[in-house]
Image 1: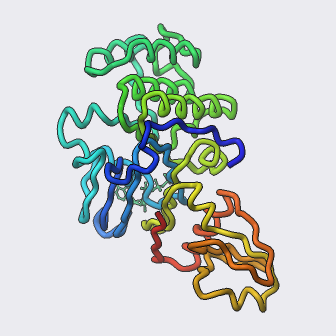
Image 2: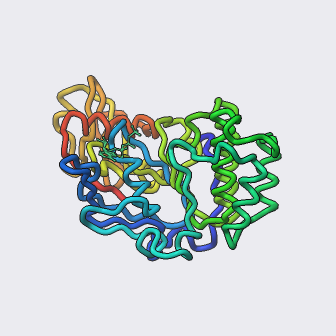
Length: 307
Ligand SMILES: Nc1ncnc2c1ncn2[C@@H]1O[C@H](COP(=O)(O)OP(=O)(O)OP(=O)(O)O)[C@@H](O)[C@H]1O
């Protein structure tokens, strides 16, 4: 994909399906009568940067909070790095979480945050923490309450990354950052994941960001998984078919129409698209996501998992 940096992975990780970083089976979360997640199945291999996208209220934060053990499923199962989320202290140390509101301690300085991180985390990487603070220009003596929103996000990420987690969970991490800082932040994240052979899952409304750094995608809408899988595989199995309405009405049976507009259809085809009276084009990630989101809006309660 153009512009997407290659993500280094541990040898053999690319196809390692047997040790999923995240696995959900019929995962459901209800808040009283409101269903935030319904019967979600997911299987995410390790060593990926996973983009979690979907409209407001789709269930993204709910999934991330379940993954770090802040809340419990109503039914179904979820395993993270092979165990129940937050199963014990050792498991907690393997996961880093930055919540949507990038929580930091207002009265503590940047340096205090690093000292506290070092005290609380057995695998704390002092050099990494110092390097990041310097790189992103955080004044060590400044109280966190006096930092800008973007600086607070950088501090929260630094603290999460210096734990050297195997999985970083980030809820809209770059939302408060200016475009330049966002680019730097995401590039850092990719480097970090590559350097440690870690995985990261980040929710975002910014599809361009997801396209830049993510190699695995989960699309949530209406509390359900609409699409999930390796980005390259998803792009290889989807096509934009350009043709007149009569041709689009009679596409081969094994081609699934995801979304149709005047003169074109976004389709999924398990193998290569057979030749026909149409022009086949490769869709971009944004078009793919928008196709599934539009379908979910038109046909609520539809659920489809593509791995
Ligand atoms: N603590 C809660 N109590 C009751 N309902 C909740 C709670 N947290 C979330 N919900 C509901 O669950 C649904 C999913 O919310 P969630 O925050 O997971 O969505 P989201 O995809 O993260 O949305 P956004 O993009 O706006 O942050 C929404 O309908 C929301 O109102």
